[in-house]
Amino acid sequence: MREPPVEVVSRVAEELRSSDAVVSKDTHRLQVPLRQLRVAHREILPPVVRVQTALHPWVAYGIMPLFALANAGISLTGVDVFLGEVQFVMLGVVLALVAGKPIGIVGATWLVVRLGWCRLAPGVSWGGVGLVGLLAGIGFTMSIFIAMLAFTDEKLLNAAKLGVLLGSLVAAVLGLVWGAGYVRRLR
Image 1 (cartoon, helix red, strand yellow):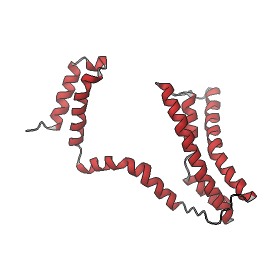
Image 2: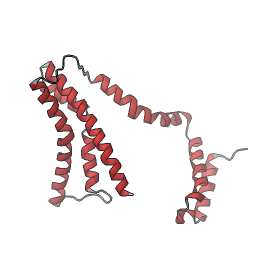
Image 3: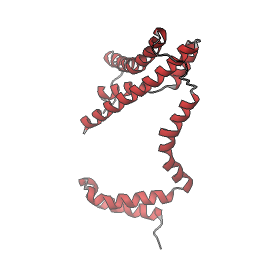
Image 4: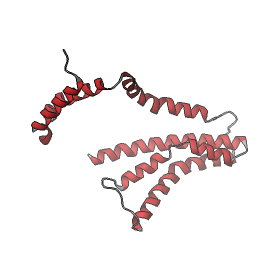
């Protein structure tokens, strides 16, 4: 007969308390007890929670962005990106997301820290603040909403929406590159 999950957790917790593997951070000796805890944790959870946990990354990072994109009402037909005013609108939106958001976030943070109104949290560096600024350029739902309020001309509205998509893509790529370098520097 298998040991009930709650008893596994109690037994492993007691073994870890009496072992010096935790203090010495001996990863080889900690692998088996940690695996036993993961299995017990999984068995304690109801099946619906296990399914929800397994599907969460797919939904959060795949299905929801596709759903938001499909419902954004972006039509690329009739957008001539080489027309002067269309080109300026598109590039302006891209520049606002890729440069404006990081400049605004880092600048505002620097100002309130410099004025002494607050300080960076322990473990947060200016590189981390820059990363947040870059990743803030990804959000396209509010940007498209504001573009819909700003432009009545269909060509300019579609150019702004295309700019939001391009700006979000560039901000995401820059954020990933910056974030990878930032994580490497932390190690």
